[in-house]
Structures are given as C-alpha cells and as structure tokens.
Length: 308
Ligand code: PMP
Image (tube, helix red, strand yellow):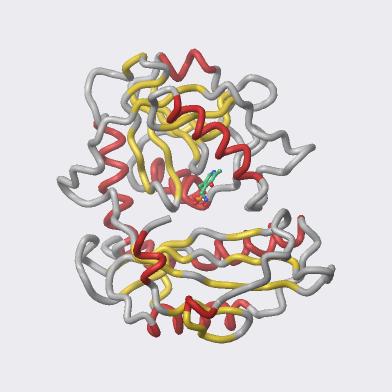
C-alpha cells in the first residue's frame, strides 16, 4: 500500500468523514467476507498535473459493488447518490487535486449477519499513462502461474471479494520469488484467464483478443470500456474467445488492463519475448487514447466521467 494512503488525512466511515487515524475497528472483526471496489478519478485535461478531478465509470463501479454485495448476501445501506456524495466529500476533505484511487470496502460486523462496516479510503497514485511516461515502457517479465485462477463454482472471480485476492497473492508471491514481475493465471480448464489484479489482452496479426467472462475473470470495467472503444473508436478488430497458453507466446503484443494497472504492457511471458517492438504499436495507441479519455479529452465519452 502506498505511503500516500497512510498520508490521507480523512476517509469516510459508516456515514461520516472521519480522520483516518480514528477509523478503527476491533481486531476481533471477521475479515474473510469483505468486498470492495477500485475506482479512479483523474485530473481533467492534464493527466500528470493538478486540477479538477473526474471519476471514471462511477456508475459501473457502483453497480458492480452492489452485485458483489448481493453475491455475498450483504446489504449496502446507502443509495448511489449518498455514495457519490461520500466520495466527493472525502476527496474535498483531503483537498486532493491530483489523480486519486478510491477503494470502497464493506464487510460484515462481528456477530451481525446483515450489518456491515463501510469505509471509503482514497489515496493518490502515479499514472503509467501519458506521453513519454518512462513507467509505461518499463520491462515487465511475467510468468504463467503454477496456481490456477479460482473456479466460479468455488469462489466466484466475477465478484470483487477480498477472498479472491488470496489466490492472486499466492501467484504474485510465487512470481516475485522466481524473479518475475508478475503472473498470469490459467483457468481450471487450462485456458488463459487473467492477471492477479487485471484482465489480459493479446494482439495477434493486428487483432486484439481477450478471454470471455466464463474464463474465471473479474467482470472488468476497463475491459468493457476497451471492448467498446478499440473497435468503435480505433477501428481495431477485437475478439472475445478462449486463448490457449501457447497463443500468448506467439502474440505480437500482450497487455493487462484494469483500473489500477490502466494499460500495462508486458515484455515477456515465461522468458519468451513477445513481438518485435516493446511496447507494441497497438498497445501504445490504445494507452494514449485511454489516457485522453480518462482525462476528459474525448468528447463522446465524457458521459463516463463524473465530476467531483
Ligand atoms: N481482474 C482482477 C482480478 C482485478 O483485481 C481487476 C482490478 N479491479 C481487474 C481484473 C480489472 O477490473 P477493472 O477494470 O474493473 O478495474
């Protein structure tokens, strides 16, 4: 967790803005059945600068939060409007004027089946996006995890529950232990699933391919956004279908997509280099368009932005 998180003076907890240092619960709280969301707000018109913030895809994130709660049998005792107001007030209380990550978290209170705790921590982050950002072009060596992605008849990966991240943590720890930067899961059928905290897209012969929701992936909001803009705005064909492991090795480009990782290029998988050029041309093109969109520079998609 970033230092910025600990530095955020205020969060929202159970209905009110609270000093982060006072947002405490008992160590006896149950921690196995929590859900959360990961949302970003970007500075308008200047992705690496300071200024007015817009939340990207607010409505889709709140809808997924409600679906995750429903899967776990939890009730969210706040309306969408109340949650938006809570988020806006927390950003304002901290006087944030740079890009922020918003992570609403809900979990059942000790002993209670329906009552929950609801906290909204918010912290600043550094984007990978933006012209000539060296973070974007960093080399990233990934491996296929020896751990399989959780199957949806055991722990549904389509819901954003903390429990699912135990699976992600095992894969990531293994990857780092073996000298890699990250891991890609296969699903329980042996097809490509997703990363430990992002979905995956591959480019073969100028076509983008991404696994279906039935390949044990989170119903990613970034993936949904890209499924729309890649063909409609950029004119690049995109296909949703199962991907065999060997197809990843034979790809011209591979990138991850997600709210946190935005568009993250991958250099190699299992130490097999991908394509001739890194980052790949289409990955760069998609990332630049995504950066413009989240910064409010693409007029037709301003509807996906909610001002703070
Ligand atoms: N898969 C997993 C496991 C994730 O944690 C995330 C990040 N939320 C994603 C995919 C991407 O989802 P989204 O685009 O909604 O952030």
